[in-house]
Amino acid sequence: MRTAAPPTSSTASTSDKLAPADFQARWWTWATQPSTTNPVTDTSGRFCMRDQPVEVWLLAGAIGGAPVERQCRVPADKPLLVPAVNLAGSAAECEAFMKNARGEVLVDGATQPLTKVSGTPFTYEARAGNPYRRPVGRVDAVGCGLYAWVGSPGSGEHEVQIRGTAAGVTVDVKYTLIIGAD
Figure 1 (cartoon, rainbow, N blue to C red):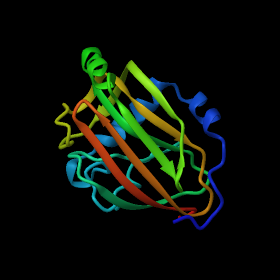
Figure 2: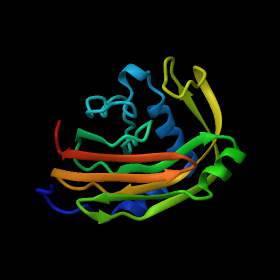
Figure 3: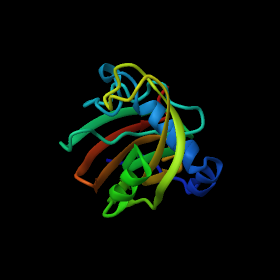
């Protein structure tokens, strides 16, 4: 349900600022918060604002494959980074994961271009109690996935749909974003 202007086209400039290792490190650090307040395991969106990085707003898929609907307030003028599917593991795990990876991200019904990331080494910070059972502290990983970079959708209410599949993982999430909320 869109009530504002369509997304801007600043996606290329945003993705040029952050290399795949950098944006995956930010996303996985954010996604390995404790399970009780984790934005990936959250079923309503109440934790979407926790520990967001400065230069981009991160959105999450879901663990478990069941459809999820979330509502999230997003500051104005923030580009979005949205993985349709993603993995932090080993080079071999990424190769198998990406073999048949498919996905789509829609903003207000418009399909967003996806960036395919294959086998990129990076390091992130995992916290105690994270849902992925990663060790606490610095984790060296190889990351892969299908990511959408979306310029700021503009003030107002927007719908973001995330759908993806890879190696038995299914993502089906719908966000209602309220852009420009403090």
